Length: 433
Image 1 (cartoon, rainbow, N blue to C red):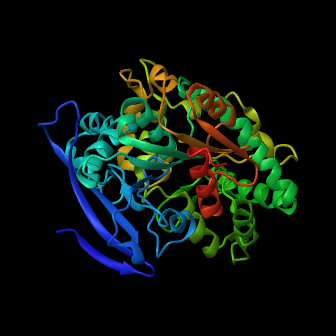
Image 2 (cartoon, rainbow, N blue to C red):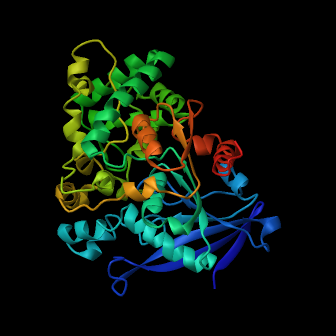
């Protein structure tokens, strides 16, 4: 029996599902999925339509809300919501350095992880939907990578959808990973420039930290080897609504005086290790580039290769002059598997995934061009994580898709904007806006 319990204003129910590891072999090995059902306390006994939430990532479990904050409060006015931990995340047969050795060596682990992309997630959702709704279609809200999954859903199982809402997650239908990162590095440069324009004092602070890391070996308390490239990856913060301010406050307390001279403070190290560690979401690092694989071309550590085309991100060259050091974000590099103790045992597995040449398509352009599901998407004007031009091209390729292009929010607009964002997009699916 599913276990139900209460939080302020909501009733929660833990749901568990068994699905095939490989949907091409439905009688073969199975894995377990977890989802949390949420309904408003005053509507718990009512027959409500369902809304499935697909979290961003890849590699993150669904939000662990308390009560009904942000967009959830708006959704609960008319839906029963299912917060799904996608396969390999949260409580859904997690894939990490502790569990993956159960599969065997790196080759077996890499083969296993090829089944953790959007196509498998959508097939999971269809099995879950039939069990939860009795076969009725549901509405899907896809945030970031959850939006990528939603476009895959529209490609291969649109009959399961009553409507689709996408926030910051319209992928290119045909871009190779190299194309994605060639578009990404200029965005990173713009975000760094905007941060330094807001906080000019951070130019010297970032340079000082980078210089320290180039001349000192620093290992954080959790065993993370802090290199200058790893430090630069804090630019990922700049894709969030409050990220520039968070980064500024972090940099303020970077150094303290010691008997041996200035050193990175304990407070700085404690916070930065939480920001950089992949311990809670190692699948992000392992399959991040694989979500762009759709043909026989390997991803081959795309972000690292493409970075070489943008020498302005080279820390040593920057510090030889007097300009601001650029920051990065939304990229995965092979050196991460040397720096991060949560990833080190998985380096060979990651290399094998980067070398694969048997990726299959994740989208069906012909079916999307004939789409009949009401779809609305929020596209953020200069989204750090998902290229705006790619999103707009895809929007034009999906029949009937309605867009809301805004510079009011960053990539986390569905959280920062809360009920207003969801309300606007639901209205667009109903031709009410």
